[in-house]
Length: 547
Image 1 (cartoon, rainbow, N blue to C red):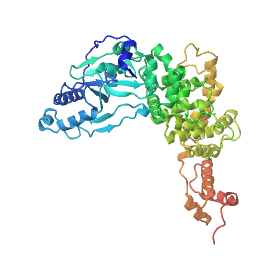
Image 2: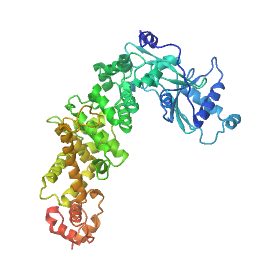
Image 3: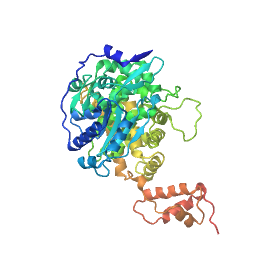
Image 4: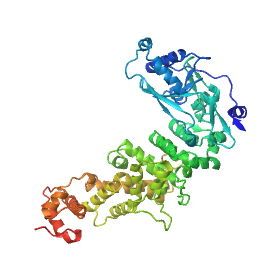
């Protein structure tokens, strides 16, 4: 027995069957592309005309006044692979080349992405680059589901059947290349006017069919600053939907959606939506490790609101300027805010692990959303160096006697950087973790009704002031660039000066030399550093000089 979308149409939201249409102004490149595609469609013989539609995101963005270089092309009566084969053949004709002024490089080589139903990727897609634009060609389709299967069976469908199976009404709009009009079968234009995100069909079934749509709606809501329809939003937190998101969707696809959210213009809003809707433990989890202790996320808003607030102040010498100075660092910073509740979590007692095994925060990033090694390495290093960073910060605030020792701070910074990359981001992770522990609220970004002059603002300002003082001190003693300090001599030169061969001792001995350099920043002769190594020969395990 099958459940068809035709039945869902009868019981889902009521929309007029006649599409609402409007005009879109094409730019010259889009006009050229449209003319070529329509020419190809008209050249194809068949029982019915080939009708092409640009679908989804391109239509939405065009109506919102945004440029888009990715276009989904929906075809009424053939697959994407069949159409691109016709296109390639048609564009080899001299008359077509002349009519459309085609030159080498205008038409790329098509390739096909196979369907992967187990990963909720249900349709084969033909991909082709035309006139510098990336196009995905697919046929219009409808979905049917067997009662005992989570994966849909695809059949050719009408434009309306295709529209209602999409994730949101604002993504279900078509631009008909033949009529040059926008077609709206689901109320998407009205929802765009109201800045609302809503599913075309009943939301529970929409999300159970493809749970990744939950994250896509979060991404579009944060990116466009649209609100999610309240009924849709409630269903997004349904336990069956969250469980399906955990086990049905590949963690790579979860990671792709999260990456897009955090690279977009409103990452704080994306994390707030994840928090408010209750999606955190479905995203930041390892489905294969139910034994992992789940962190308390009650104060998670402190981390993402705090980071957003810090990023708003990028004056010279500010925390943001000192720690988050590139777009890549900004993206990593938002990842650190996302996993900040995990930063203090330890492995269960008695867990046997290799010495270099990832702590839970790294495991969650690697297995939960397939973060790259560079990212998990920074998270793991942040976890391991957290207490040391906080201890040095406390020393500075307390005015400890050793805080002017450049070698103490410089060597620590070099070690943090070498054992995980980007010591600056590790310091940021420590800041966010301490904020979770010490502040109940971060007033400002995203916090309404909290007086800036109130107690919360006072605590926030004092907290930020502590970290600013710590970073100012690192600048004052000139150790911010300690990892880039060039050694006055290398291992071979040091071994030669000591009259021995390089060995296991070399690394530690070179650290002694670098520490000496940090204490003596204006010296260029390494002789005193070599002498210090010689004096500590036994401690460092350096063999006697060879005769």
